[in-house]
Image (cartoon, rainbow, N blue to C red; front, side, top):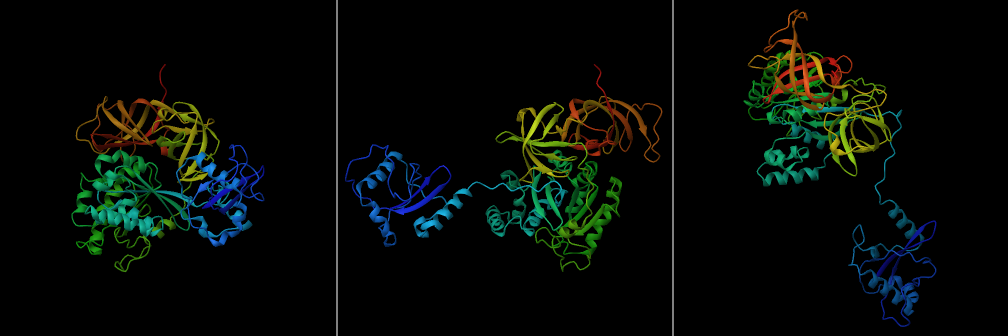
Length: 561
């Protein structure tokens, strides 16, 4: 029988490994209070960790132990201990019998001590605030349903080593069983069973990958029109948008027509503050396309005028590139299949983009995206401005709760400091999970964000069949907050070309008009003027599942007592 135990004194613990022969007790039975005497040279204190490993015939390798076990007292004590414990046999953590290792002497003790000490997961020491860190960039994948957003995300994770080949092979087997063999790459991001069964992304998927210069967070937005509110939440956290369109005959036209999501997603991304747009023309390997330059140019010609109308500059803000998410062509390395494309592949192009200007000295603004309970209250969000440190005291607006940051995770890696642009997970003290709603803002006490219900805004009516009058209700999407609002008054119309304001109050507004209106929210919301803080001053109005208007906050109206 093999027996593993430890002897501890005030300063350290030693671990020993012995082989014993069980014999009937010959002598007085111990009362259970005497210390066990297995090996007087090594075992000093009555602290014993016993793990029953396995019963084997006596090995000739440990003959020196037999003499120490000849007396009956030792055997009886050992048997007594196992009877007292009355526990079922357990295998040693890590699997396999320790007897096979043949450890003995001081080396064995040292190795066992090291193993025991390393069992807890080590906490990586965070880099100091002034240490050079890779720039953090949030990339949102947007586009019509089935354009291949999740598949491209999964392929990028595989190409950058974030998902190993074995896991992908497992996904491929599972997908094949469901007759969905082309979906397996998207399963790296679509982890929900419902999403996998239907092949549609519902919630915004998250993943991470790194290049030589930058650290990227992938935000995989849902393409289906039923989940546009989720897509807006994802776009509000993004620095950069990737509009995925399908080059397959019929699919591009469906996505780009009025009912398709290609148009709406591009517009919502611009409204959410995304300045740079990469258009990935996907499915170029499809038999109906076969890497055709004519089809690529056709898609490009139709998209550019619309993107220009939305507000993107075709020369500076938009970059087109062909690719195949299924085969990975032109994502990491240039493909021989499209010699006519001379630009950089997708991942090297992302790495070559100029850095974003962010101020770590500004006021702390962290809009809450999600919250849950896990050994306390945990909140998720993107730090828009300022910097947060562990153990810092912050204020949760609009409820004005004082909270303390217990722990700080940036992309699931624990750190003591985080700068602007990072996706954070914070464990907070001083507030319950039920007291937080998505759209609340974490601020520093010295510079609180504004909150209220009434505000004046400039609105562009994008799509609405009827006229809009005072008393009209819609759903407001501003940063991560969703709230019902009512247009209480129309103040004036604004000329699109000259910017001149009308002197008389309009009785109504209709599609393609610009107006300044007063809006009142159903509850108190956190917001800033567009001039002071653009990320919290731009919004979208939606009604009946359609985006009807976009706007920016001009003035906050104080509440009347």
